[in-house]
Each structure stands twice: as C-alpha cells, then as structure tokens.
Image (cartoon, rainbow, N blue to C red; front, top):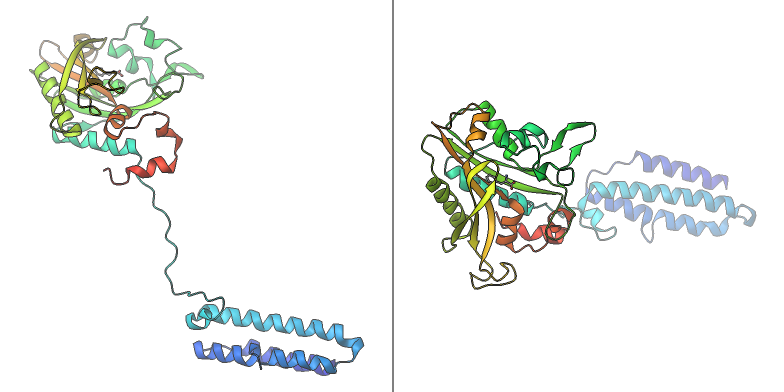
Length: 342
Ligand code: PHE
C-alpha cells in the first residue's frame, strides 16, 4: 500500500509537470498513461498483489489517479485538434452552429415600401408621441366635443390624467407639424395608433397608419388624386384601378374614400371585395379651413390635402393576410414568410 502510494505520488508529479508541445506529445501522453499497455492499466493489474484487507483503500487511490490522468488528457486534447478528434470523434475545427437571423416584420416591410414611394414625391417623414392630448388628436383636427370618436368606448384614456389619451390616428402628428412649420408642408406620418375595439380577425385595439399632409399655395383635389393614384400604381402595380367615393371627415372638406380594384379577383367579384370588385384602402380630402386656421395658416392663401391609410390593410391586400391577429401573435412560421419581401 505504501509502495503504491509513493509510486503514484511520483507519477502525479510527472503528469502535472508535463506540458505537451504539439499533437504528437498529446498522443504520446495518451499511449503512455491511458493506452491498452499504459501505466493505468498496469497499475490496475498490480492490484492483484495487494493484500485483501488493503484492496479497498488501494482501489480508491488508483481510481483518483486514473481520474487525474484522464482529466489532464482531456485538457490537452482540447488544445489540439488532431488529438481531440480521437476523443468522441469530434472535429473541433468545424465552424460553429449558426444562429438563426430574424426577419423584418411584414408591417415594417410594408411601412418601408409606403415611405419610399412618398419620399420619391418629396414627402418627409414626421413622427410624434403615441400618448397625446385631446387638442392634437381631436380638437385641432376639428373633431367636435360631442363626436363619437371621443367617447370612452372608442378611445383609450390615461387613468392618471384624463386629459391624455392614446392617439387614435396619426393626424395628431400632422397637427404637431403644422404647429412648428409653415407651408410648404409635405409630410407623411407613419406610426402606431390605438382604438378601443374588441380583438377579432378584422379589428384590433392597436394598428398602424401612414397619414399624409401637403399644404402649399394652389394645392388642389387634382393633386390629391394624382398623388394617391401614383401611390397605388407603385404599390400594387400598373394595372390597378382606383375610384373615389364621397365621404365625411371633420378635418377635410370635401372628403373622399379611395377604393382600388380587387387584387384577388381582378375586379370580377370575390369574398375579399364582397363581390363588388372594389376594396377600400384609405380616407382623404382637402384640409378643412378651420384646421389650417387652428395653426395660423391663412386658408385664403394656402390649401392642402390629407390622407390616411392602415398599414395592416395594405399588407393584407398585398400579401393576402386574412387575419389581423397574425400581425401581433409573433408566430415565426408566419413572420418568416416575409424574408424576401423588401
Ligand atoms: N384620420 C383618418 C382616420 O384615422 C384618416 C384620414 C386622414 C382621412 C386624413 C382623411 C384625411 O381614419
């Protein structure tokens, strides 16, 4: 037992003092200590000669020694590709597993497309806060005190301060632009908006808009039509037709909603266009004189047009997304389909 302990002490010193210079050294180490005719095997053989009452203690010593040798070998092997290839058949020189790369959200893709089209026409991008006050969201936009949109049922108000609300449209950003800038003004306002709706395939409590505003001398309804027609052709293709229907918004006069010919059936009639051949994509109109006056812009000198569209709607028509909830469920199987769309 004592002999064995002394022997092991010496070997330990030898092992701990050994530093391999290359792969050959590592392999030589393995053969010398761990090979089939190596030292560890030999010592195990010598166990036979140990008296029975000392076998337990000797076995423990030997095991500890074996573990030390194996540990040393593993640490050398990690430093050397060829040697490590011999343990567990792992090739440490292979490149690592690549991490999956995310994709742009379809709404980001479409927002980007909309912005670049209007940028080509000279529109600048303006942004504003999602938490707004009544004035920028409603008052300045000529939405009267008793307008149903101001109802608690339609709008989210901030508990701590009833004067604050979550903007219901990015017209609030147009208000902020007119506050700070005098004509000519030519901006688009992309952003998230909130409405108190029950979540379903067709409605959500938040969605995204791009609104636009152009104010200058001699801006006419013809400018509005041509601008939006250009947008549609760029966005949906040259064959897409448009039509304007008279409508009402408190902040524009006259107002119109714009439809495009149904992309799904080409105008023949299907469930998407409810068999009319047309689908609505945006609201628009000539800026109401009262709105201009709210910002000390003289309506006798300046006129303007404005429009607003939902990004979800454009995305739905362009990529056939049939349920609004898909946009916020973050299911990668849905999101990954838009990788190449930009
Ligand atoms: N603000 C309107 C909405 O959110 C859209 C719109 C903007 C309509 C500008 C006309 C002019 O529905």
